[in-house]
Image (cartoon, rainbow, N blue to C red; front, side, top):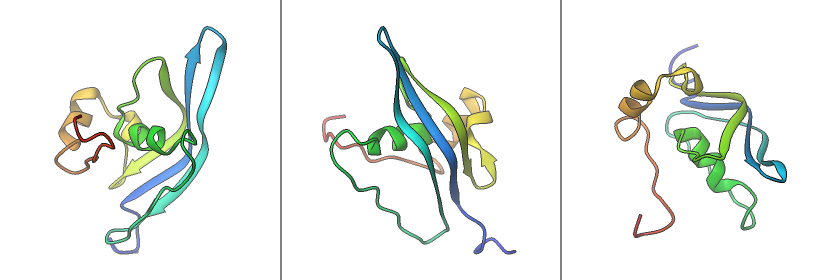
Length: 105
């Protein structure tokens, strides 16, 4: 398999939860997809369905009380969830980025 055949980004059974006084709220539940270089993917859905939390999870930018609780996020063959914070910061902005919804952020 050459580089064009392998995914650039692959989510495998990604789950992200928020832990509150009332218990665990699952915002992203068992999401899986893969994107090859040159492909485009759109996450579409109603407000509050988990699109932004999925994107923040990929970037490892989910604030507490949120936490990725399961799955894998593989970018260029590396599981981003296994990287140290400094290693992830090197990838963010250089190899992978995010355009935020709010123009003032």
